Structures are given as C-alpha cells and as structure tokens.
Amino acid sequence: MPATERDYYLSKLFQFVVIAVNDESMDPSDWATYNEDLPRILDEQFPEGSPHLEMLWQLDWQTLFDDYPKHHVLTLLEKITSYIPSAPGIPSARGTTTTVRESPAQVIDRLRKKNNFKTIDDLAAKAGLNIKQVYRIKNGQSVTTDTLTTLAKTLGCPPGDLLP
Image 1: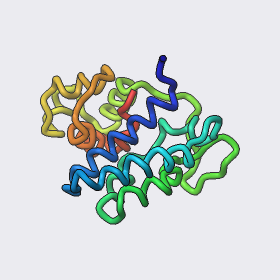
Image 2: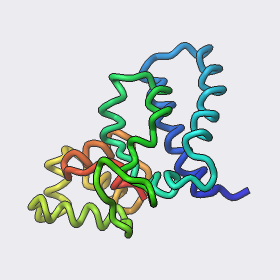
Image 3: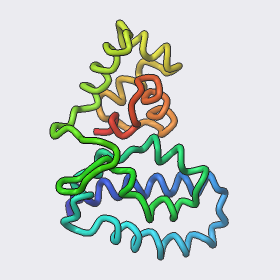
Image 4: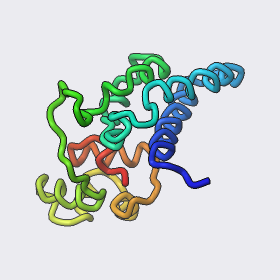
C-alpha cells in the first residue's frame, strides 16, 4: 500500500517523538503509553481532510524544538497545530504563508545570497558543516536533525523550510 502525504508527514512527527523520548531516557515500559496515545493524538490533530494537514509541511520545527524542553512531548503534540503558521480558511496569529513551496535547494540558495555567503563552501564553513552535508540537504536527502537545525540557524529559517 503506497504511503499518502498524510502518512509521510505524520511519520516525521513520529520520528520527532522517538528522538524526544530517547532524549528523556524513557523506560521502555513507558512506550506502551506512547503506543496508545500517539496514534490517537495524531488522528485527533490531523483527521483526513483537515486544513491543517494541507499545511503540515510548514510546521515550525524550530519553535517546536525550542518548546520541547519546557513541555512533555505528548503535551506538545496535543497543541501541534499551533506550530503551523496558517491553513486555508483558518486565521493565523503568525502571519500569512506563501502559496508556492520552495525546494530545499531554492531555500538554501535564496537565503545563502540574502546572508551574503558567496558560495556553498562559505555557508558550510560558517555553519561548521561538511559541504557534503549541505548538498545532502539541498538534494532532499536524509541528514541528522542536528545537521538540519544547524544549517537552518545559520540561514535564519525554520528547519522545516529545508525539508523536501
């Protein structure tokens, strides 16, 4: 069965939860709670046809990561839609969104120029990354969350802007 766009984005949220749970050094027996609560919470927040689902790609990962140390991960997920800038027909307190999504390569090139990095080498050096890591992100390939967050901070954008 092919994965839907909803499945893809919800799997990214699940990956965040796994990382967060590992950070909390959670006892494996507590996974039973997550196995019960996580699907229910995600289904409640993103039912089929939800306008938030269409805008999930704009999730503000940076703010979510910043808020993570302050809140339990399930609490964050219960208010996950507040990390989405806006959805069609739903007013947003965070401003408007663009209607055309840029590729990671377009975002990196645009922000590299805006931030006066002459080359990808310059950008990678400033971020403290290997140039191959920057190209992996540009090409939509997988990298660690730390690598993605580091490049996003250097460019001044949310990490979600660098996801394909």
